[in-house]
Amino acid sequence: MLTLGFDTSNYATSLAVYDSGAKEVVCAVKRFLPVAPGRLGLRQSDAVFHHTAALPELLAELAAKAPLPQAEAVGVSARPRDAEGSYMPCFLAGVSAAAAFAAARGLPLVRTTHQQGHAAAALYAAGLAQQGETLLFHVSGGTTDLLLYQGGRLERLGTSTDLYAGQAVDRLGVALGYAFPAGAGVSAQAALCTEPVTPKSTVRGLDCSLSGLENQCKALLAAGKDPAYVCRYCLLCIGDTLVRMAAAARERCPGLPVVFAGGVMSSDVIREYVTARLPGAYFVPGQYASDNAVGVAILAAQEVPPCRTTSA
Image 1: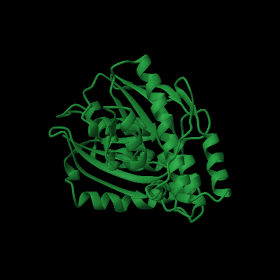
Image 2: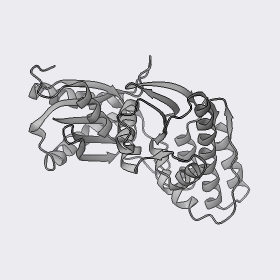
Image 3: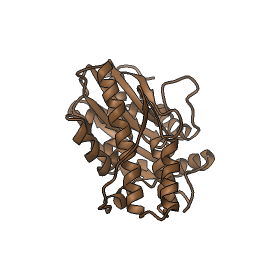
Image 4: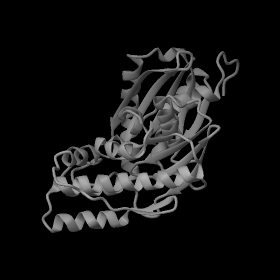
């Protein structure tokens, strides 16, 4: 069975086709939302506009690479998280397009969340889709969550009490002249640092605080510290935060694998730091770590049995 996934986050418009029989991704396409230089993201009205403009073109691109008429179900991320009050207008663009596609072809429509899609994509890429329980970090510009994946459900065990990791990275990167989202630029700059860096982190139990990191980076730049050093310091502080949160989680849930997902987890600097201190940790490839529709398509396949006989 082929399923089609839609995800319209505040960063990118994403579509994917998944083959549940072969358990493989047939095709995935993505387009980042355009952000003006010096800006830290988009207004939601602008994000909805750009998604609406991009979706027909990406659907046409996907149709040239995958047999969309064979799709038997459609999945869409309808909101950021599975929590009361979780809502962002940008996801309405994806819901509208997915609902229209499903209705036109008489297909079931499965509504899920952006975070659940991230989790499904990460577990698929890590080869842990059938694992009963997993500790999973979702670290991006909109969340720094430590989650327990259990029986297809996500329980939040810990989070940042203030700034998200992606916000700290993006604010530093934009201050240095990188385009938003700035993670790739910050990580590339950090790789140029040859000085020893001692990271600092603020973790209390399963929760963390990252607002101090932003202030520390500003102070280092103001003091004339080399940008490569500041970028490496920023990323290693995030890495140290995650290591300490994971250690606390393993005390509570011993023996569980730990998976890292979310756009910030695409950084090689963070991955090298964390994996050296957390043996067996899973860092999934960038296309599955950053925003994508793969997990949404996978969740649609799990919700709708093959050889359906009725439509939604």
